[in-house]
Image: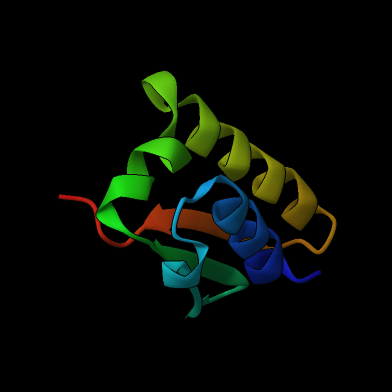
Length: 81
């Protein structure tokens, strides 16, 4: 499954500046993948959502989808302060 594409599509959907969204996949070994999301500083709050609900929903969606392939996929925001 293309987890990077899924996360990129979601991030671009909520962003005011979708052309600044960049999602990189980093293999950590042992079936673990980290997805690093970079986007405009103004759009980070939209992706995180109120009380972190949006980012947690995205992380849960990716985690559940990755269980079928016996992988561990993490979603991290790369431009957090």
